[in-house]
Length: 222
Ligand SMILES: *Cc1c(COP(=O)(O)O)cnc(C)c1O
Image 1 (tube, rainbow, N blue to C red):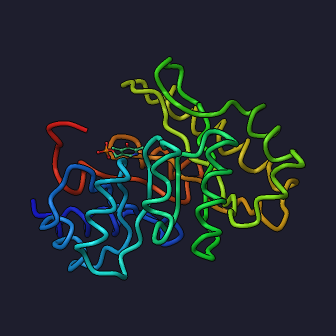
Image 2 (cartoon, rainbow, N blue to C red; image 1 turned 180 degrees about the vertical axis):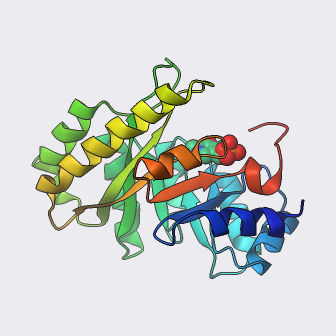
C-alpha cells in the first residue's frame, strides 16, 4: 500500500468533523511530500529539532503539530510556526510558550495532556491538576496562549474495553471543562486516538486523531 492509499482509506472512513494529523516523526521529507501531494496538510512530530528542520525544507502551508513531550528550553525554536502544541503538562511550560509567542506577536494554541493510561511511564496531568490550572489566576496573565482542548493517550493494551473506558472518561472530563471558558480557554479540540485505537477514539468523541504507522508504515524507532 502506498502512503496515498493509506491516507485515502483513513480519510474515507472518518467523519468530516474529525481532523487527521499525519504523524511523520522519523519519516523522511520525501514521505511527507508524498502525503502532502495527496492532500494532507497537517503533520505531527515529537521532537522540536526534527520538526524545525522539516519546516525549513517543506512547503510553508503545512500545519505543524508538536505531539511530543516538551523541553521548555526548545520552545523558542518552533514558536514562529507551530500550529498546535498537544503535549503541555505544566504551568511552567505554558509560561514559556506564552513568552516565546509574545516575541512573535502570536497566540499559540495548546492542548493540556491528561494522563488517562494506567502505565507509569506516560506523561500528563491528572484531572484535578487540569482543573487547578484552568481555575488559576496566573493563567489570566498568559495572553499569548489559547488552551484549545485536551490530549490523551490510552493504555498500550489489547484490551479494547480498557481503551474505550479511558477515552470515555477523557471525553466526559473534556465536556465538563466548558465552564472554564474564557478569553484564553476555549476547549474545542479533543486529541485522542492513534493507529491502533483511533476508531474507538472517534466512537468515544475524539475530534482529532494522530496517526503515524497506519499511514507511513512501521517505524524502526521513535
Ligand atoms: C508516535 C505517536 C503517535 C502515532 O503513533 P502510531 O501508532 O504510529 O499511529 C501518536 N501520538 C503520539 C503522542 C505519538 O508519539
